[in-house]
Length: 328
Image (cartoon, rainbow, N blue to C red):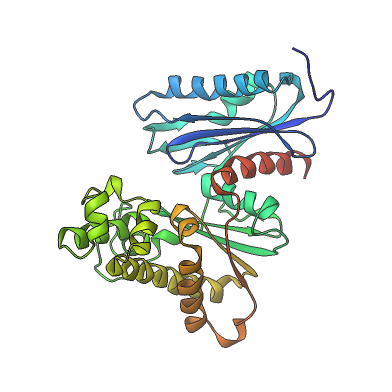
């Protein structure tokens, strides 16, 4: 293979979160030199899934005309419980994997260091290195989607527990004896302020005839009530839809107020498809809720920002984290 990068090391970031596997290759200046996106296959087994990851990395190297011995490291952002020290996926719910030693398998295949991290952590690290959280000393990220992901970057490093990730903001209890959450508890923030929870309320409103645009274009099927559809409904005048989203955003702000009191971040980043579709609404409602609930001494000590890297944040952050772990 003709290597277009000479002896420079390259870095690969792989994001397993969401419905697609997103892989990106970066040169030593961290310019994008190649990318691949493939839909995740929830029905495939571990062996087939790991083989797809390996094949994807091989194809990415080939298409970018980069020799495998130039690999400085591989970073993988994964949802679900992880053993970060050993690089083991304890459980990957969207693919049905359990106890997969991904770090060891990748290092054996490619002969370079590999690092497994939480997908929200890698996304936030991407925002810290290249996006909305650049320059922060303490940056908190909150990403409402099917669930609610949280992450923190502290003094240039991913803040984490001894062996696993942390900042499970979505599972902060906000309602005593509230709705059941996917984690098995009740009344978590996810049950009232995730995109899924808000979409469920919107579907109820459509069923009652209160959201005519939603009913016309999406019906009451949650799979059809996506971020773009919600924005269209608000623009079309479905007042109840806007009220539901604003209520959810305020709940996010209340929990973030407690986070400010605990951790004193200088930057808070909001991300995810719904925030990107309605940035002004979220900045307004979340901002007001935080300001109303924090200690007065923390007013004007932080900036509230919208994530800027979109779907690339996870792969970019995973690759950058691999480089950080190798080079320091």
